[in-house]
Length: 404
Image (cartoon, rainbow, N blue to C red; front, side, top):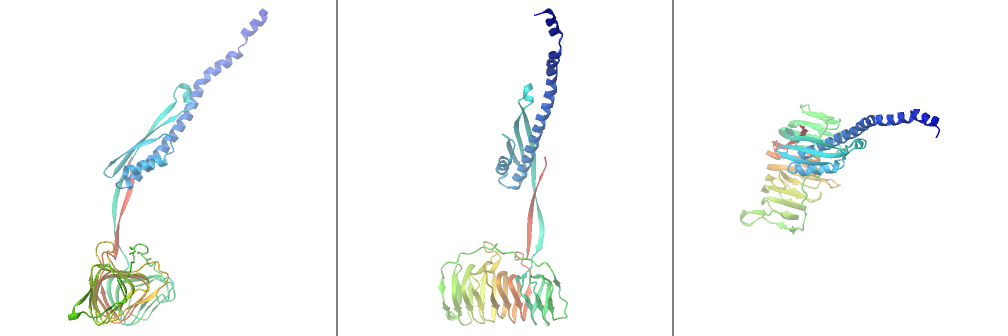
């Protein structure tokens, strides 16, 4: 090679500049790459923290299964690969720690192949009670029926804590005739058109947001088995004794002759068809529930009744005196005829019945709640008080919050 060419090669610095620049750029590339890696690590840590926060909140809500609930939530919701979590419970506090390893891309060039991340969270549970809220004592549920509530002359009701709610928006939704004495808390009527044939001041609110059926689909549904007896006629007991009616029976189309004393034993009595009780009978039952299997079933009281009936205070049918399925599609009339005296306690849940209380029905000291399709009050005399098991409701609200 000529000397001239060797000198030219040695004097050319272009290759050296490129090599030098490449070597000098390595720290810059590592710094930029580290920024990208750390940004992804921060995103993964944020995601893991959010999942851990939600997990301890879920665990705090699940009284008795806090750890399993929190662990299950974290496993199912975590989006960070390989993340694990451990949880602890201390009274109402649920705490957790999560960890994971996030692989790097650019930082691996300088020997850092992964970054460990951790997260901590804690939540506490607290319970607060809401005050008891009044529930209406009389419901008329029919939404489009005219005269869904009819109060005729001679009706006297003294129930200062009782709210009557009428859901009808028909015209008129309710009628109040003259000659009534109604000492109630309020009449809440969804419709705006009523007829008030009395100058007496009444606590009537029209256009009111009347309550819906609070028991629809919530009451226990008994199994209706075979009839205990069918079409049996009970004559008056010899020596003036009483008919003792065992609980757990299915009564199918039976009649009581004369003016008997009838004692229903505590428990559930299923009425299938019609049970006819003649005039001037005396009916007793403590801790009893009557279930009408369909809208064709009823207890027919033929007047002059003396009754003392109370619902159970505990158990499956607590506070339920009479009820029927809420799923029936048809409605029928149900008449409560005159009585000498009635002392009854419990829920009368007949949402598919058009109820009528006839003349001289006297109900004293009773604690009842009535749910019906429509209702007519004739010449009656009622004194009602609230039933703490029915007329009000209170609730406990559980809340959870993060503390870490």
